Amino acid sequence: MSIIFLLVAVESIGVCYGMIGNNLPSRQDVVNLYKSRGINQMRIFFPDEPALQALRGSNIELILDVAKETLPSLRNANEATNWVNKYVRPYAQNVKIKYISVGNEIKPNDNEAQYILPAMQNIQNAISSANLQGQIKVSTAIDMTLIGKSFPPNDGVFSDQAKPYIQPIINFLNNNGAPLLANVYPYFAYIGDKVNIPLDYALFRQQGNNAVGYQNLFDAQLDSVYAALEKVGASGVKIVVSESGWPSAAGDSASTDNAATYYRNLINHVKNGTPKRPGAIETYLFAMFDENQKTGAATEQHFGLFNPDKSPKYQISFN
Image (cartoon, rainbow, N blue to C red; front, side):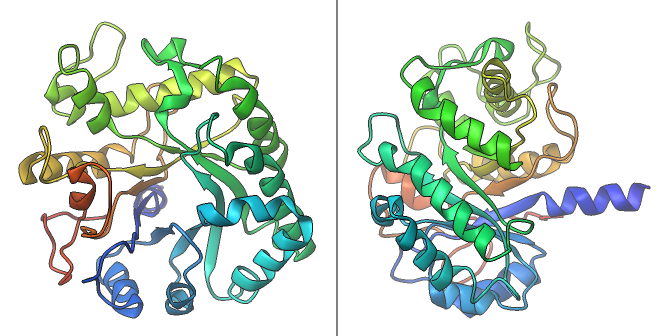
């Protein structure tokens, strides 16, 4: 019994493989690094064919994202079929594509928001036509900005602005037995509200529970999304944590020590689940490498678990 549980726990940790850098290893070297480190799950943010080729026969489970610029075209059912025929069907026999993420952190006011649900429906139909619906689930990845109230976690609710956007998507997930993908970053919540959030609470170091029964910020954030799902009639929809990480440099509380603490404690923690949902949490760490061409906040270039030369930034066991 304990051996089975251990296998489930090991399988619950993946790592996102971002490629926005000019000094990163070859795709095959990256896949070999995943295998040598016992990382059994990967997320890629667009259908990179050299990566898909390198994944053949690797047994690594994959979240495959639709590129943001492709989303508008997938309103067209033929284009969605073409996408599946190009990026899914040729690889499905020996690449373990588990989820397709149609959009990453699309906000209700984003121009792309109008395309997410029709694109999901069209991709789902194309997956079913290819007889792959038992192997591959279609979803989208949200961030925490869609939650209007997140504390206490049981009061979690989608914002009034988000609800018309996300409700039909959640209905789709419910109907198709697919999980909701959620990017959960205690780091950003902490630096946005340091007055009320202790660093130890964000890093899983707090002793004992707070007044609402939580020992760490990750659980509180995740359970607020579960509470929001319950309030829209989707208590059966599972959440997969599609990104979570802590930067090692270039920002407030961004240090090698804090990042190492966060990743180690997160890996150990997700084996056990949250107060609302006990059991292993399928979680993807962000990210495999520092990406030196990422734009935005300076910390964006410092989320890697490994350096571009494949040496580890932290002494971390993934299982």
